Image (cartoon, rainbow, N blue to C red; front, side, top):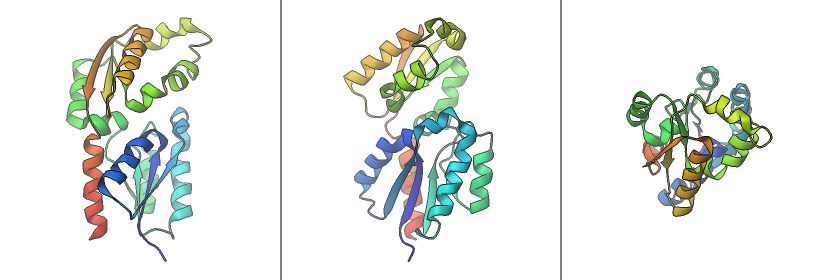
Length: 200
């Protein structure tokens, strides 16, 4: 018998989604996260999401996807349309947290902006330093980030430690630093609206 709802999510959103589930006491909701490393190979995201949908289709009344386009060039949306599954609106987690209007305001103000979230601050060494090879070839930093002007840290649960790390990361990249508190932003609002639809 199918029951409840399954939220298929990017691993980079796991902490925030679990927090939302606890805050709202969503007992009916199961969260399953796919590896955050998929962002390094965005062409694999649609296939991974589709495999998860097909695996769990008969187990849940509702399936929802917590991904943006995430560099799939529209291929993820084609998969979701095929299966009749919705996702969080937006291109990526930066837009999820900041909200579309604020994110595009940041982009218009300074196109050369590199964004951080709580997850990216925590995983900076892995996803930026090591995966870009900067630990082995620090001279590549200016090749990758030479056209950037600033780092904008979109904080969900700001702490002194995370803010310190984010400032250090901006300095490491040789960029100006700004911090903007978003909380859980439109992600929470969207899922709360979905919860109402699922229950009705």
